[in-house]
Image 1: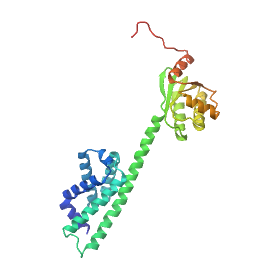
Image 2: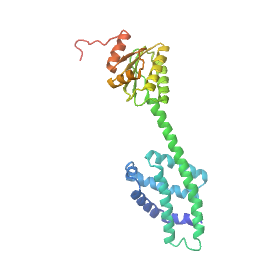
Image 3: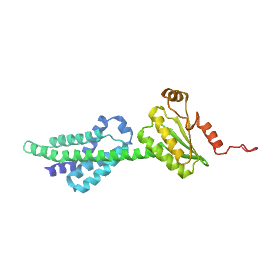
Image 4: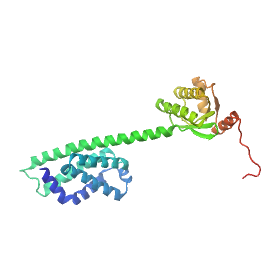
Length: 277
């Protein structure tokens, strides 16, 4: 029965692909389609149909390689999993109805064809879901690592002076990244003063303050001084209300003032040269 299905697909592949694309365009979320051009959608749809066929005629290894490549591609394109699953269901429905119209399925073989469809499509759906999920998890994991690396950069601005601008919420995991980057960067850049700029941190609560104090203490232990910059009035009020003690390091309300103070602490200053543009 699998050969019957394969032969029918082989003779009607273009028609099946066209009907599948038309139905998927009408059913899917427009946001998924806006992510790719018409040409890319058509090519990917063709690859999807070839993937369906390959499970019937190729070896397990060849099919898995094709499936892995396809899963990586649709994840990059932003196709959600439900779109892919609906594609499988739509394809099988188009195929079944077409075979009925052509008389390929009749009373004499109907149950055998149904069983053949199940043997073909059930494992295929499981393989697609598993492969898509693993690809998505790997993609998210790589993105998370990249974001962590960018979430707490230590930037040298002058000899002996480095700045760590923080943006967004600080949780325990990110606090560990901040601590690691601080200690590594202080030694690497031979920093004398480190400015932690919290202008982009929306909320400073007890936990956030605790992490910052720990970071400042760690910086002090490796021979550098730490300064906290970007303390807005509402943040200052919160710190006072929570009774958080920040006496162990210098604070400034802006990064500009922080850099000016850091220059004084390192016995440096910016001098305007007469006649310079």
